[in-house]
Image (cartoon, rainbow, N blue to C red):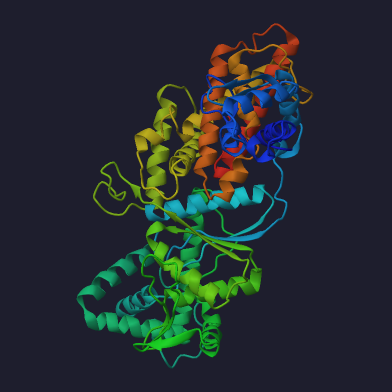
Length: 590
């Protein structure tokens, strides 16, 4: 279906053309004065300069043309040259009925389906997920769902950190604690055990202990660096331990991501890119892209238009060791070879923007990607506590993600059982659903690049711009629809929303529902999930205003009642679609 604003713009552009002016002046926008009109066109103001005419004269000419269309119930020119527009009920009725009976409510798939990769995980193995991992997972999952809704092939990659010094630290600490393990016997040639010599709990304790000890004992850190080197160069015992670490860590990560309703198509790791590094480095040397500077191999990435210094991208350190840059560039090589993406989106802390600018420029300069391959960086801000500092536990430490989820779920359980008689099992299940909406909506309703305060009390509220408020609205609509069915009505055969005569709150709800077309498309194009949140908050508010002003089930006119029910059905389905692309769902009752 064509977006409603595009239909109006076409009509306005034709009116300008019929009056002898260029069509480009017919651009229409949603009114910033909803008390005066629903849509507005300011083109006469711009046309006045070109045609040397008073804008109000041009506006009056165009308005006379527009009045001939049955699309509008009101078109007027107001000083100094604005064109105010209201849509006719007949046009709106036809439009929303088409939405009601069209797949995806008229949202069209992208004209050209793209292959898009999203890198939105980035945790290190052997470490528990903490609140710092929340934003990349939530934002990335939403973008993946939006892209798929629009018909793109979207591939989500967790991109685990598994190849750095933390591996050497864990191996060194294990050797210190359990030197008798067969993995440390250099003469051993048999098969290694299939079961890991540690649990996930032990593993999560080993790494921080080793990291802290290495900072106070240089010789221990040297040993860990040597273990890292041996691991990366094929030591059998160390690689067997590494495989155990990966298996146990990934199982635990999957469980915790599942609690967030986040799924990855690929569980790729830094180590997967290692085989691509030697050939990539040789290629950069042979093509003259890379040169030696102070012993290190670098590629210049500065451009003439730069207003700030962009340092060279280092490919290898002076000792020949690779860096994060090397691994990320090799990962791009791997992704291009295996998936040929049209676009790669990195959902990462905004403080890494300069780093990714270097990597992207290097990838382009060295032709690791095609000319038309898009590399996009979505930098997100920090999730802070009420003190404005990064979110911590009450004791001042970094909060584990599973503990935050538990805290939110407990708060929701308390609120659900506070004023309602409900079975504990059902209340717990509902609390998980509503709690997830509180976490995800609380994050996504903020512009990704901005820092925000994670306020448990506010985010779990059933009032205001929150996930629970959105879910409560959906549940309210479901309840009305269920009561309608209990009265003998059927939603299956509803053919039309009829708006021959209506009040302002009904028309406002119809208009807001009609604006759904384009919401997800625009939000995905701008990598801006907060725009979907803003839309459904407005839609929920508009519905609740309609609900409080309208007799729905009590309406005696059968045709009018069916019209209201059809409108509710459309509203509920739009809200459900939007929360699905945001990555959460609604309960049946609350």
